[in-house]
Image (cartoon, rainbow, N blue to C red):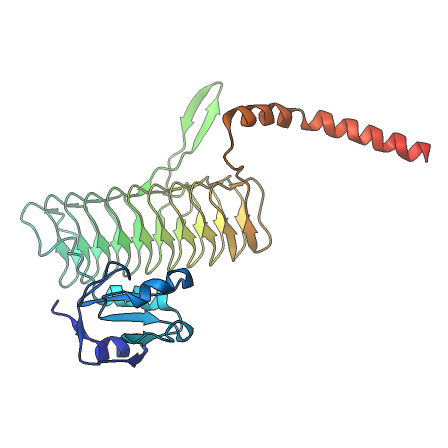
Amino acid sequence: MNGVSLKQLAEHLGAELRGNADELVSSVAPLDKAVPGQVSFLSNSKLRHQLDETQATAVILSQDMQEGFSGNALIVKDPYVGFARTAQLLDTTPKAAEGIHPSAQIDPSAKLGADVAIGANVVIGANVVIGENAQIGAGSVIGPDVVIGSGCRLWANVTVYHNVHMGMNCIIHSGAVLGSDGFGYANERGNWIKIPQTGGVRIGDNVEIGAGTTVDRGALEHTEIHDGVIIDNQVQIAHNDIIGAHTAIAGCTVLAGSVTIGKYCIIGGSCAISGHLSIVDGVHLSGGTNITNDVKEPGLYSSATVAMDNRLWRKNTVRFRQLDELFQRVRKLEKRLDTEE
């Protein structure tokens, strides 16, 4: 990309431009690292001092941050959102695949839309439907009866089992596995009897799933990931989970089976959510939180203990085991005091 003019960028962002509309920018950079030809942003007042020294051709700012700045400014309500939209416009990420590689194995029954790109050594099974402009990265395996919507991008070595449907404009990163068996077994006198997982996976539009993340298929009904959900790397989504629209889940979080998470939730990294629970819309779990009961009210929830010196932690662990005994002793003392009064 040769770049866009600040006039074009301002129109793209719906920003007020203060400065030279004809100057060109071709990439984004932090304030303190930017050079001419790059655009930066300022959303944190603690970094205001960097504004006076930045070499960026233009800076995305809010109205209250731009005072005293003599350079080219793009005034927006939320500079971080403005930066995100600018980064999208100037994105130079290569495609996951271009054209159809001769080494790809495509079942004759598969239906490919216009301008589908399929990388080297891709395997596409029977009755697969892939929408127009989708990209399937090298080494990916797409099982039978899969539907991949228009504009989806699957990076290298993604595995999609049978009966997985995804909507439009999804991004699936390398190593992700969609539709693997849920952890379903019955126990007969110590022997585990596998329960076939006959449901599928249903993924909405504009969903992003991180590298190494696993989404299990449903046992009988489908596992569901609704529109606009973003899921980080190394996340486990178990069978029959339902994740509401526009929820974000950070890395290394684990959901047990049959969990329902509402819309617009934010689940921090390394959270653990027990099975058969429901979390309402608008819940925020801080990193490391363990959820063992339904969450019925929106808000911020936390449960992880803070790091401490190991010797103190060992002492506190012993005291934690004594909590019930101490509680019972306090109750007895309270009853005795009540009686004496």
